[in-house]
Amino acid sequence: MMLMMHKYSSIACSLFVLGGILLMGLRGSDWSESSDFDDQLELATWMDSYQTTIDQAKKYVKERYPSLNCIPREWISIQLGTASWYTYTLESKQSGGCIQTMYVIDSSGRVEENNIDIKVERELFDQIIQNVADLMIDVKADPRIHFAPFIKRNEDNSISVWMLPGQEEIEGGDSLAFYGPEFHFKFDPSGSHVVEQDVIDRDLVWGVPLNRGKEIWLNYQKEDAITTGAMYFAWRYRNHFNRVFIETKKHITAIRYYDDGTYSLSEMTKKHKGDRYICFDPNRRG
Image (cartoon, rainbow, N blue to C red):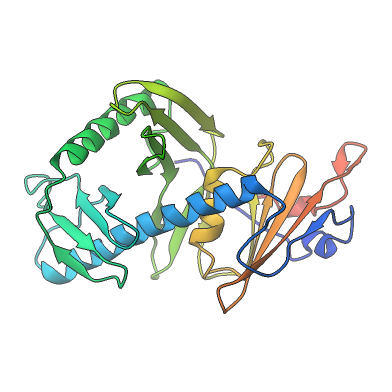
């Protein structure tokens, strides 16, 4: 795996004094000036619930089966309604001693084994995930990177799959959260045909140690706008950092989190000075 430990600057462009502040987000749960941001945030919160469902199920399996040889790595989640999620593993009992089963998780985080009959949806999602595995080879995704799948039926009945770098435990009880390459495949309602495909920064992955700093600077300098993966990272790890900076080609966005669950946003345009931008410390790069 090509791993780069990302550095970040506490200067934060002198809190956005240099270059001029274009937009200051008000503390709250909305940023009404930007529908794109709202859409990305809504998707990021859905992805966070999706992954939290899997985390809860893994914890349940570990506690319920203490002698199990391994905890399955690959899971799929399906939202049953506004409160409950259905999740299952993609690995069988014959696969390294893992266990394949199904769980329903309600809004309180309670996990229960359940044999809910959603066979059609499950078989469809399983087939799509297999198709995505083949597509990842076609787009030359780095096989050394573990990508976590997020699969969702859209309002128009199409089905989207996002593949984002996962999180890994490291020695000392810490974790590395990865970001960088991301893939989005949209299928028709039957799951047979890809109708849309997006690949972002597939050649570089960044590893960020959690619980080691109050601010983090995410490098998306090749992208025109904040990506799904960037917003997911910023929201998923909001309890690990007080502030997240996302740097794209022309903008820097700061998201600051507060203990009461609200956040504030600031966005500015970077300005050129010769061949250098004047709004960041070039020494912060890893």
